[in-house]
Image (tube, rainbow, N blue to C red):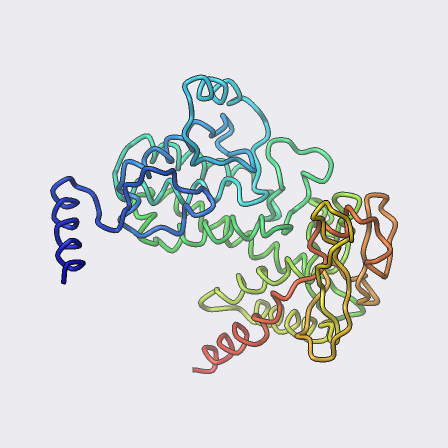
Amino acid sequence: MKRAFHSSIIAILCATLGIAASGIERDRPTKWSDCLRQSPEFYATTEAVRIADNALLYQRQSGGWPKNTDLAVRLSEREKTEIIRAKSSTDSTIDNGATFTELAYLARVYAAKKLDRHKTGFLRGVDYLLRAQYTNGGWPQYYPQLTGYYKHITFNDDAMIGVMKLLRDIAAKKSDYAFIDEDRRKRVERAVEKGIACILKTQILVRGKLTVWCAQHDEVTLAPASARAYEPASLSGAESVEVVRFLMSIPHPSEEIISAIEAAVAWFEKSKITGIRWVEKSDGSNSNQVDHAIARDTEAEPIWARFYEIGTDRPIFLGRDGVKKYDVAEIEAERRNNYRWYSNAPAELLEKDYPVWRKKRRS
């Protein structure tokens, strides 16, 4: 009874002060990694506005954002000045969730607070994504810094698919994006259509059969392309999952889209690896370091390799020397232990997403 009474008093005080009883107005900063996982009420708070203003500070003149930036930290005036000085940097990217995450966040805060500066920053970011798209429909990892593998069409770490999801929601007039003008929305809609066409054109054909996608594709030929020394041109058992999920999200898929999904699912089914686990074990030192290794286990759930050799479907692994190996134990410890060589993400695609998609198509 006392606890209920105290809770009621707290709720009354919070309401009086304009603070949500759920603790939305918090003393501790929100984690940027959780910025899109908040309750709807959060985006109208002073904390949400503070983070949105941080995002505007980090937005480059190009309209995009750099990666691996914690936009939720409390910034000193000196730090703000340094960030503003970097606005002309050409490091805008869609890698590691950059740019499309900031845009989704700004849209939520603008929808809640209607502060013009957030709308302006959002529209600049959308225009950046539209400029960055190649005429063939793909997106490079970086723009305007089109050097090396940065210029490849990039599915790696779900970069292009992250952009496509955002633009799809804008084109569909979802509530967070209702403020966008119709001319811009139409341009976004066309960008999504071009992106889907690019996805279909980049699906890798092996001996007359469609398979999946590479983590990145050449921006001119659309052929599978390598990136860093340990990221070869290959069939991706990881990035291809979100590509398929995106295609499954299309409300009225064409026969070409349906064929692409069915072919990719068949490849995932054929390429699953059974009887092993990817495990961590102590390296025997006092440094608390762990080593990753393959453990035999007949009861293990299926897993998939990050990279498969095109033409053989054999899992492949590379260290920083770029030399292809067929056994992950043969690459150096630093790469073996600091890269995601295996994934179980296709399991949910096969067991849950695909059956649901097929059922919807039949209904």
